[in-house]
Image (cartoon, rainbow, N blue to C red; front, side):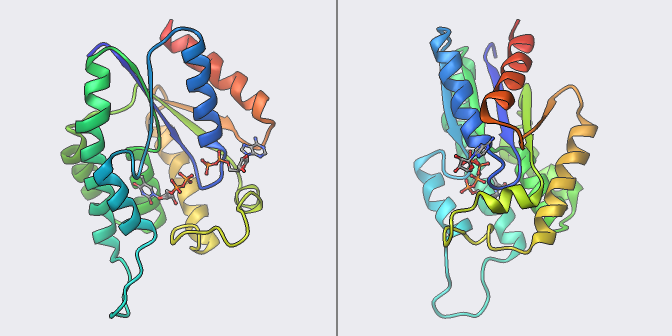
Length: 209
Ligand code: ADP
Ligand code: TYD
């Protein structure tokens, strides 16, 4: 596989989609072939799974999406995403930039919801065939910054969760980045869009060189 695989991670409203889009534009202007994609919902099937994971509301029962069921909704989305979009593009030698990937599950379902990390890793292995990003950009912001960027009334099921969950998710990203220091590039997302991007661009260029 000759391509290069980059994922963007962070808590909601960290600014990672803004940075990912900017990186894609930069790489395309430099003449690189880039596929820009996202989870959940990067495929047609994934759009349905995204709705189920984030916006589905039960009509005739009290319970919402069970935490274990939630893992498999995201895993199904990821398996389809790898098979349909990511793997073929990498095989064609393209750069793939995805807004969220396996670390989102480990951070949100693992560290955030407290589900068993070893089991989550095994499910990721099955969903992705073991495909990991070459580079993971973690755009790190504190919770107050994240909440301050949330449009009023715009919260989905996950964004309506308590602050404690997002604090745990953020800590989770910290653990994950320490465990894979060569793969992770942590950037301080509380600065200006330009300052953050400059650091990301330098990090990406260094790895592509
Ligand atoms: P995410 O993908 O992490 O949810 P977005 O990139 O969609 O975040 O950004 C969330 C909101 O914050 C958007 O309104 C965006 O314009 C704004 N934003 C992004 N980066 C910054 C930044 N560095 N400083 C201030 N606002 C930002
Ligand atoms: P999205 O609207 O794409 O938000 P963002 O702009 O923050 O990426 O919503 C994705 C939500 O789903 C976000 O709250 C994180 C959550 N999520 C998980 O909990 N586990 C996962 O594996 C993935 C991919 C996302």
